[in-house]
Amino acid sequence: MTRLRCDPAVIRRDEYKSNRYYLNVMQSSQRDEGRTIDIGGIARQMYVGGSFLGGFIQHHRHRIAPVAKLVDVVPTGSDVLDIGCGGGLLLICLASAGRIQSAHGIDSSSDAIETARKAAIRLGGFIQSPTPNFECRSVEQGLPDGTFRVVCLIDVLHHVSPSAQEKAFRDAVAKVRPGGILLYKDMCDRPLWRAGMNRLHDLVIAKQWIHYVPIESVDRWALDCGLQIELAQQISMLWYGHELRVFRKSGADS
Ligand SMILES: C[S@@+](CC[C@H](N)C(=O)[O-])C[C@H]1O[C@@H](n2cnc3c(N)ncnc32)[C@H](O)[C@@H]1O
Image (cartoon, rainbow, N blue to C red; front, side, top):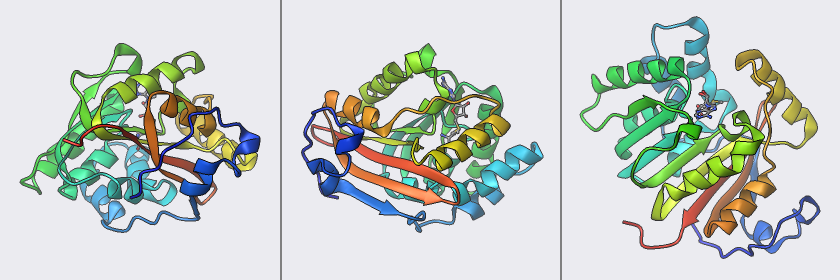
């Protein structure tokens, strides 16, 4: 991947296409291009029992979210913190692929953590390499001690109250070791029909009125924290629109 220096100037929506750094890094795709592992197969093997809806969500998440792409950008041997890990699918897949040295997932939902822990125990029966551990904890309670080579913030910020979103993002950045990455993805707030379809999804599944963070704000916060944008990608899957970022913290990658 090419590292790019980015202008920390505020990026307004009307500058979106002309801004130099966007011209350099923006790619767009209509599908999940990561293809290294069979996410659906792993999900079907690891998420068994439990509620029908819970299992269905894990088994089919790779059809609506670029899970394979996320797995692909995590370097092998990483220690990973997944903030708002849900049922733990990303860490379970990373562990299945032998990519983690250690992995810690936190989520505010005790049901999600129970699902994740069950999957991790089941995974332990299949692999010798490390399995993730999971903890019920909200972002607002503070993040776990230490720093990590990879910190993930995947589809979480739109569930956090607007007044706490920027702090949650900056707290996540603080957990990235020098040279490490913040792997960020959230749902797009444009075009409106895709944003609306996802809002409907969250009303039905999470029973929550969500609050999108414009990706321009996220980029601005990242640049303000001294991160570089290494990858910026828009991905459309069915009627869902995703904004993916790999932000790198400067310093030696340990
Ligand atoms: C759409 S799910 C994404 C789960 C997972 N990151 C994934 O991509 O599969 C959002 C998750 O964020 C969690 N969440 C929402 N607000 C949170 C908060 N304030 N602190 C921690 N987790 C939170 C929810 O419980 C839910 O599991």
